[in-house]
Length: 395
Image 1 (spheres, rainbow, N blue to C red):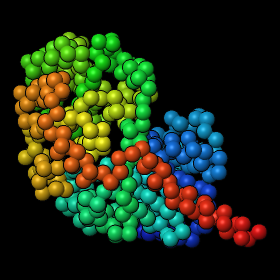
Image 2 (cartoon, one colour; image 1 turned 90 degrees about the vertical axis):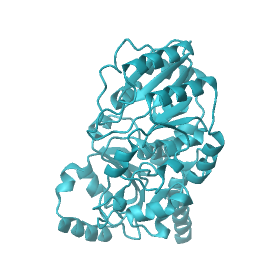
Image 3 (cartoon, rainbow, N blue to C red; image 1 turned 120 degrees about the vertical axis):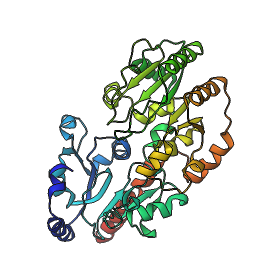
Image 4 (cartoon, one colour; image 1 turned 90 degrees about the horizontal axis):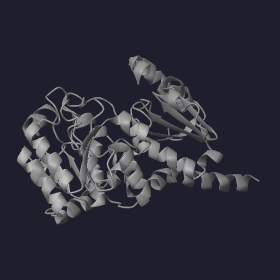
């Protein structure tokens, strides 16, 4: 939160009192993110605009990069900094966040929904050693995609059963929506610069390794060349989407690779292609410890997990499951040979773990439709109907 992080604990305690005192406007909504306008918060915002909520509600968007959106044309929408947003927050009946938060306890007359940014594979919140006593519970509800994660989310945020909201990720609505074939082809061409021969894409999403070597180390130069030829010979491309903190491997970014393209967040943002639309365009996913696979299983497509450093990662970061491998619905990749073998299986249409993936999908996700934004916004609809009945009665 930048400057807000520097405020002493006593100040936040005082702000808790202020928040209880200030009257809430039932027609004000604030959305908060301190890591860019994306993910679940952006999905909820888009849903609100598409369904005309800004005609009846004042919508405030509090962002670290708010200046990028100050000239946007949406009616009754205001983009503000996190500091200015803090004062707006006091008056808002509804608040949604997924990156960062205002560490202020919501009173009973305020609704704060912690959408977070994915079900965890890695330890988060109070499950991280040394963070057991930190207070992360500053919400009315916290999103949880299935009963399987209930205890994990409760332990991570010290939440009660009443605070757990079983719902899919709002961001997956975009992934599960239909994409026109011509839009998909144009989007891929813009990102990858390939012609119509290369009609299929494998997406590789490596996790940031925090200084422990490159995320792409599993493929040495020889294997990369072999992979590039395999893709080219079969009409495939591979798109490598780096973590925001990662840097591009010099060889991986080389122009000598015809069918492998490395992109970052800036590239994706400039293309105006949503990340979850990108997932929907892919034919298979390669990842490692990123929680994106909990969403991707909804597409029912092959997944490969690069786990060559799982012992070190488990020791340094840790997992929420005692046996993380049993919760990985895909092929386990421990070497460059495994990597090439997985890609070959995808190309040849061999989906060895389809049944296991489908079983885990039903475990991870209570919903497999594109109505999750509607679900998380339903509390606004319920309260609006209540207000209308009250006003009608007063008349």
